[in-house]
Structure formats: structure tokens, C-alpha cells
Image (cartoon, rainbow, N blue to C red; front, side, top):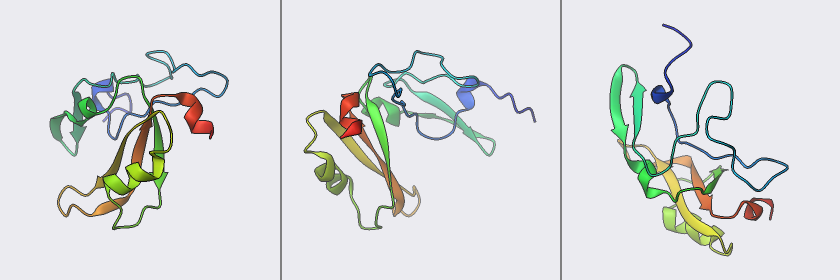
Length: 121
């Protein structure tokens, strides 16, 4: 196997990172070995020889900023995570990541904000 896999073999959620000196999102294609996937478009996934289309990215707002939230308890729900961040005016969406077979929380989630300055608060 080559270490130089195609970009459509991406595994894991697409996360837009906030540049430290700017409020603009990074340009398309930034980074040495990856491109930022367009939110709202299906993404091809391939893991352990299986390939499928992931439509879940279409549920997230375009041009948002996402925060990784870790150390969540097993009882945490999407609604509870959303309630914790609802005080931010640009809050858009929250999702707790769950095991697909057991539906138990994996202990982390993502929160979407529409304004990068809310990250600093």
C-alpha cells in the first residue's frame, strides 16, 4: 500500500480550522496532503476495504466553524450538547458521536458555529 492515498479516501469528520490571525476560513486545498471537503456534498469513505458514500455532511451548515468537544458522559445527548452552546448567537448545530452498532455515546461530539469569533469566547 502507498502512503499517498487519494483525497477521496478520507476517514473521519471534516473539520474547518480557524486561522489564528484571521476570521476567514482557510482557502480550498490548503495543507500539504489534504483538501477541505465542501460541506453539503456527499463524501466517499473507504475503511478496511469497504467503500461507501457519507451523506451526513449535508446536515451541517456550509462555511461553519466546528469545535471538537471531548470527555462527554455516556448519557449526553445531542439536545444537551446543543443546550450547553445555545447561548452563543452563532450556534448552529451540535452532534454527539455514537457507535453505529450499539448507539452508545463515544464520549465526544462536534459543535457548529457560524462566526469564528465565538470560538474565542
